[in-house]
Amino acid sequence: MKKLKVVLIFLFILCTIVTLPKFSYATSGHTTGEIIDEAGKFIDAGKSGADSKINPNDLKEMSDTLYNILLVVGIIIAILVGLIMGIKFIMGSLEEKAEIKNMLIPYIIGCVVVFGAFTIWQIVVNLLQEI
View 1: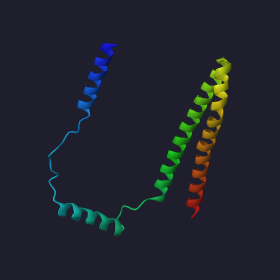
View 2: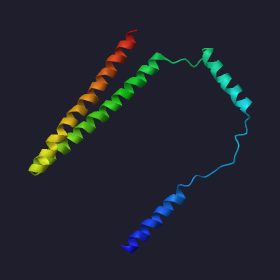
View 3: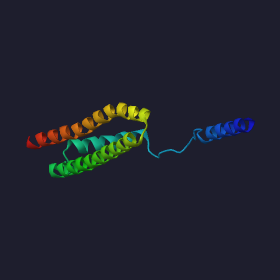
View 4: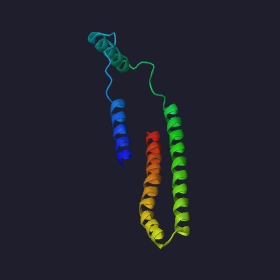
């Protein structure tokens, strides 16, 4: 018991030393005026409608790709969690089966939220695409 206390105190001290803030006295090399001027140039370039306008086709492709990736990940996670819960329900005792039944409601709500969010996202993208 005494060794455990010593080890815990040592770990606490070690963690404290590791997480102490480290100060840096380095300067950025820029004055405040230069930073403000650069920020002003950045804002002016945005207002002038420079050549960096967003291409709607590229935005749609990126949105579709992100949608598909997240949908596949959501489906995989939902299936894996469902499989694990099913195996636990089949193999478990009465107490474990009761716990699984209690976990089933949040699981179903989570599936509805995930797939509902993707459906809403797809509807919004299709509606905005028509505009």
